[in-house]
Structure formats: C-alpha cells, structure tokens
Image (tube, rainbow, N blue to C red):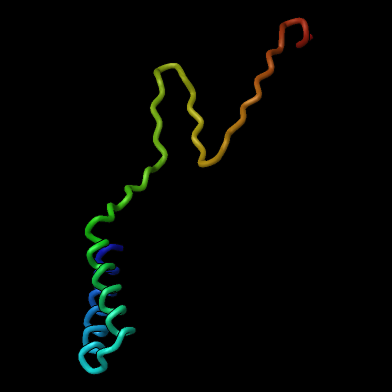
Length: 83
C-alpha cells in the first residue's frame, strides 16, 4: 500500500511542480508543499502487521477459536438427575 501511495504522491508532486512553473501562485505553491509533505510523511509511517488467530492447547484439552466473543455455558448433571 505504501508503494502505491508513493507513486500517487510522486505523480502529484510532478503535476504540482509543473503547475507552479507555469502559473506561480499561492495555490500552486501550497499544492507543491502538500505533496512534498505527504512524501516525507510516508517515510515515517510504519505499516501494521495483521495479526491472525492462533492458539495452542495442552495434550488433554479442547480449544475453541472464533473471531468474536464465545460464551460457553456448562451444566453439571449428577447421576441422580440422569435417572
């Protein structure tokens, strides 16, 4: 994604510079400064790594994995209730 932004801001800087060359005005100068600041700020933005779901379980366990909240209700039935 950063490489795409680099090319977009680079193209914008070239277009803004041409605009500043042919029509030196306040708006064209602001455009060049904005594109230059965008390119410089790209250098300091760190990309976030996407974290996936992962889990580990012991030898005698059951694992439940989901992307949302999981509620587990446990009911203990005694031998007397089974009869």
